[in-house]
Image 1: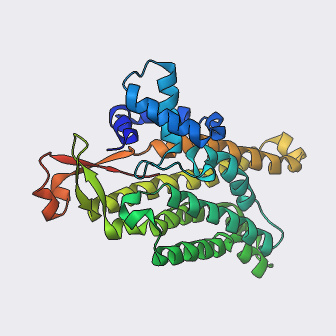
Image 2 (image 1 turned 90 degrees about the vertical axis):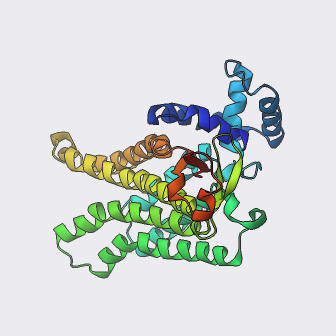
Image 3 (image 1 turned 90 degrees about the horizontal axis):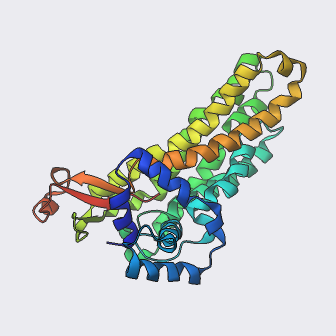
Length: 316
């Protein structure tokens, strides 16, 4: 079992402990760390990883958890590390949720957002489902199709408004403010399900309580994808919902009625803030080292497992 999983096994017992840990992992200062620094951190952990009170060891753990893929031991591309999700995605999320004057700008921003989300999901998947950590042609086509479909579906509110310009105010408000909420959640979930479909199709590695690999389980793969799907839908659904609700409440205030131009900056700023706060919350909803009961596994694995439950890397 990779040192990262061993750390998660000891430190993600509750939602609050995971949330506190993710706030530290997502510290943007580690973005600038070089590959050599990351490898040195891993060497330090192999030698002195149990000295958690040592500041150098504690920093090394955070660097390893945020920058090294748990399944392969390889350094994750800087643009797809967890601590980079906010600075890269926040502008794309804000731009994708604002009302556009035409369909082309909506398609453009949706394309950038969905492309990055697909790349992030793929880079942080459970890599034990693929041979030699290589993406198959089938999966590459599925990822491309996911981006294309999600781009068009994400621009649907703008397409409706442009296509039916004679809509009444209620219908236009629904398309602008209400429809993007479930749509954002569904598209985020859809991206995870398709991009990481190989985990359910091929299975992922499961471990016993001592960290020994027991085998490969499709049911554990399905559970890992399901949990991450819920996590990502929560992130994007909440990010779309809270600013819309806030604007509804603010429009009743007299100072906003006198200054309607305030609505736009409030929407943009609140979207970025909610997205930033929801990232560690969504990452903490489920443990990184997931558990699955022995009786829920395939028959051939039940006979191999001596423990009552096994563990798997959920991915991100």
